[in-house]
Each structure stands twice: as C-alpha cells, then as structure tokens.
Image (cartoon, rainbow, N blue to C red; front, top):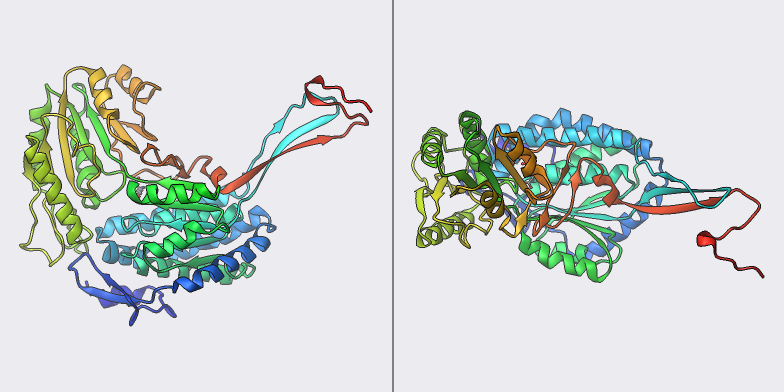
Length: 498
Ligand code: UN1
C-alpha cells in the first residue's frame, strides 16, 4: 500500500507536516514519512490560558449538551474509520485489523460518554438533622492534559477526551513524538464535530507537538488541573511527583507485566489462541500484552510445544499486507532492548525459542520473531516490562505458589487464569487472588472492551480510565447540606447558643 495515499486519505489540511523539526518514521520500513512542526515551548502558556478561558464557558454548558459534541465526534469517527485506522497502522506499525479496531474503540468510548453525559449522578444522603438534606454534586474539574504513548496513538486520547469533554473539561493533548500525525488527524476530526456543533469555545481541544519538555510544561502548570499520562513507569515516576507538588490530580496508566496462570483443567485450545493473540498481537507492544505464563508443571511441555507450532504459523511482515499477524517493533531501539532482555534471560538459565531479528521477506523495519522463553524461575528480567513479544514461561505445582509468583512483580495492570475449576477461578478474582486492576477468567489479558474501568495498581499507577465510574476522576465533588427548617441544629449535638 502506498504511504502517500494513506496520508492523503486523512484530512491533515492546514497541519504543518513537512519542513518541521520532528521527523516521523514509519515502523513499516523505517522511512521518513513527514517532518512535523513542533509547538514552540513559548506558546504553551498561551495555549493553557486559552484552555482556561474555554473552561469558564464549557463548564456552564449542560452536560447532555456537551454530550452532543461527543455524539458528533463519534459520527465523524465512523465516517473516518478506515483512513484513520490505516494511518494508525502506518504510523504505529500495527496490522490493519488492529488499526481499525483502535478506531472502533474510539467510537465505542464516544457512545459510552454520550450516555454518561446524562448520568453524572451524585448521591442524596440522609442528614442527621431535622429539616436538612445532604447531597453531592459533580462539577467540571478544569484543564485536562492528556499524554499518550505510541502504541495506542489515538484510542487512549479518546478515552480521556470523550470523558473529559462530557465532564466539562477542555483537553490539551501531548501525543508521543513517534505518532504526531494520528494526533493531528484526530484534532481535525474533532474540529469537524465542533464546527457542526457550533457552540464549542476556542481552546476546547488543542494539540501540543513536541518531546518530553513539551509534556513537562503541561505537567508543571498550576493551571492544568488533571494530568492523565499513559506510558512507562519511568515516565510516571517523573510526572507524578511534579503534579503532586502542586496538588494537581494525576491519572496514571503505566507499565504492565501481565500474566496468565494455566491450570491443569484449562481448555488448552482456547488458551493457545488467547496466548498467541495477547503475547504476539501488536508485536507485544500493548500495555496489556501477555508477558508471563505460569503453567502447571504437568502440562508445560504440551503447552510450550503447541505454542511453538502456533507461533511458527503466524505470518510476520508488513502490517499493511492483509495476511500479516505480526508487524514490526516501533524502532531499532525497541529491537535492541528486546535482544538485551533475551541475553539476560539466557544468562539466567532461560531456554529461548525464537526472538531473533527477521530481515528476509520483510521491509526494512525492526521485525522480530516472537520469543518463548522457558525460565527456571521468575528472575529479575522477568519482573521487568520489556515492550516486545517475549513470553516468559514458568511452572508451578501448587496453586498458592502460582498466585504468589503471579503477584510477585512490581506492576499490576492485567491478569488472567485459564481453568475450569470454579474454586481456582473465584480465588483468582478474590481479595487474596490477582492484585491487578484487570483479572480475567478464560480470556487473555489484552483487548479489554470499553465499559469496564481500565488501569491497574502498584507501578501501573492506580489510574482508571474509560469505563465504569472512571468519569469521577475528571470532576470535582461538592457535598451540599441544605437547611429547609426554621432552626439551626448543629451536627453531633453540639450546643452553641449565644
Ligand atoms: C494500551 O496498550 O495502552 O486492552 C491500551 C487493550 C486495549 C487497550 C490497550 N483495549 O489491550
């Protein structure tokens, strides 16, 4: 597929995508496809000020009316799904079906947010005082900065933007410097929706193109009420204290080191399919990718054998070719990090199947053969998140040990168990089971749908996005006590008569 056609099919009119200082390389073959203009750091304060002005207006627009803007955004995304999905594939290197799936996820969150715009409910609370009523009201919070990673270059913005907009917050988006084109395309799509809506204040949605220092400018500003950041734990460690220092709010979605426990009763046909999708899909570059397999010793050899067969039949190659299942890593650095992790795993006594760079029959990008690594134990390298298709396999004999090994990593995003034993399944989801934000039974850890809250514990950062009541992170709560009596009783029976 011709790159120029993919670029021409999306509306990037007015965006400066040639002659700029930010070179964009497609992971498909490493070639340069654009040179995007960076936002001068000196302009960021004015952008934040424009967002603050937009906030003053937008917070007074009734939430269901704000929902109408997001409804129109969903319509525009439906119309733009194919070309935008192809651009995602070109810029992030994911296969066509996953590029389309990512845009579908955007459409789904818009639908969800539209419904939510009529359901930003507060509670009514019984007062202990006669003639009094208590209630809580949810109000818009303020300017929301959204910092996103290359691997889900558009969906993660939409999770945040759709909810922030219905909650009454303007959004300033700092996409990954590896994927600015998809961000500019999304901004255009939202601008179309805003033009149809007709009442959106200027500055309601803005994009900052740049590198880490552009993100830092947003993180440091007292006028940015919420910083929602997705990326590595290292990035989160830099962002969180800076926001905490000024008592701002963070929503963090950081690293994952997601595992599957495979019990003796597991349906191995299903498990093999789930493992291959979640371990090698997106070339192992989802925050929810399966990275650790904790398998009962009695079935380990059979399972590894079946997985090796399944891996061998997954076509690796150009993600824009319709038969491909495994596209490239984002760049050479990612490939080198993968090779370094495999070297360490070998040094720790691991037996590595696959994992080598692939150069034949593929374009000139960072293509690799996904790796299965049989480990003698869960060593330090296994506890690290390497953003590549490496599946470490460990064994267990005792279910309690499997749970302990499962939780014995710093990250806590997603997890799953394959079992037909209801006790194991329930235990896995219980308070003493998986310590992750997502705990699944008989499905893999990746590919979550809109509707559930998304995020995780420990070094994953604790944030929740997209579904359930994640909207509460984008609003502030006011508790109201109303006295409709002619007395002024004090709570706790305190007497204070003058
Ligand atoms: C991410 O990798 O940052 O659950 C998000 C999933 C997708 C989202 C992944 N719905 O795999």
